[in-house]
Length: 586
Image 1 (tube, rainbow, N blue to C red):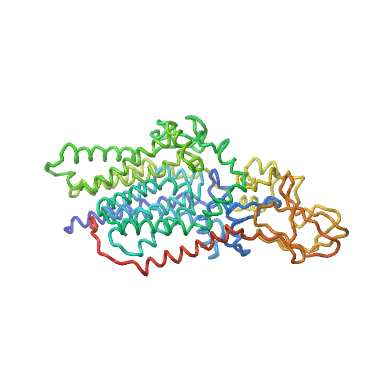
Image 2: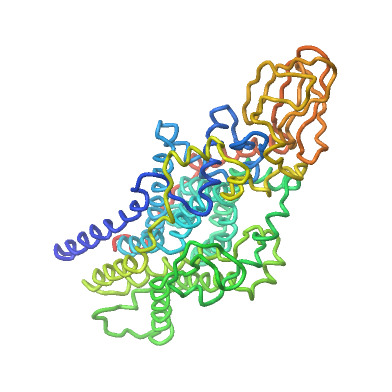
């Protein structure tokens, strides 16, 4: 590379990196950005942090912003984002700043991992372009600024790391890359289970792509083991979520608004550059955008044309190359791009109503809820496809094409980088303190998600049928002298005038145990609210409600520890074999 070429490359790279800074823009305004799920996530963040500070780990049960509405939310709901958020929060940052730092970090992590993945294949310029296409894609923006889907946004940050670690393992054969692969599998799974389900076929085909070239049984075993260990690391979440789901109202996740049949995409919605802040509804009149992105479509179409020219029209020929050189694409590149294009086609198919029989046949798919979530792999793969365009341009035309595509994506998508609205920190505090009537809570959707309430809770108490605070029991024959209340541990000193059946405003769920003066007693929860009723004899007594691990949770926690040790052992036992690196200097 001569000095002139080096100058153009540095100028192109430097200018492009400035474009990434626009991702910070939506978070500069004071206050908290407000999307579809912001209210629930803000409440859950506060309760999750409180549960950790109270000594609950891993977090499984939380209280709500009003008493009498506790639920085992994080026994089933992906906790990845909430653990990550605690890092800046425990450093002393206020909630608003900690949330913004977390989201910005995840967005740039997503771009960085995409960059590392593509660079391992094609070099720097294609990697920057793919990372930018991935980060600024309409679906990525929709996920965070419209839907406020924080768990899915987190999973999309880690997903490119899965492919990067697979590629680096096949290049270097280091045990470190197997450990990293296990970590990214676990991080994606714990952050958002539907995302790892959706990406699984793509991960499988990408592994097969490498095995087809190397034909190594040992490599296949190592990669398979690392993937297995990755899911094993997520055992503390996966196993209880799978084996204890019969204890919650999962029917709500398959009916009404959450019925996947209501969320197929009409084909024209994938192309329309429409942007909105409404809801996903049945039919074609959705209020939110399901576009892949006009620039993503154009670059994908161009790659299709290039592959046809390279491997069908000019196969075996060497046309003169002045501006473009399609012969630079190897057969291995062709297979990779063919997988990408096939994955895009499959993703589109799974978003359309024609795929409904598959959704109804394959177990687990209905829990993805929204067919349009397949926009995630389609976006990932079309970003990979864009990187292929840079490869074929010769000389300085490469930098021209690079800058042109970067600017095209900026012009097409920059206008979407605006949150729906903001709320002040003071307004958020009103939510956190529970200073809302039932009517206000219902209008804002501030009730706990019914799907994650225990099945014994057949209804939530109305405003006049729940306590003002938890330091109360429903009986005139007893009074509470003192209480220590945590999400997983509630201790009372109770003075009982005569033998009575006391109601404690805690919804029963397997793992809750009741102790009177250190002796376990049986609670009766056969009431419409699933609250625990306990018989207490006359006198002063210490009553403790303790949420403890069931055997399946203990087993799951132990498995995570074991698999963590196995993952670390890869680093110590892995052999380092020099591999071939493809075009690392582009």
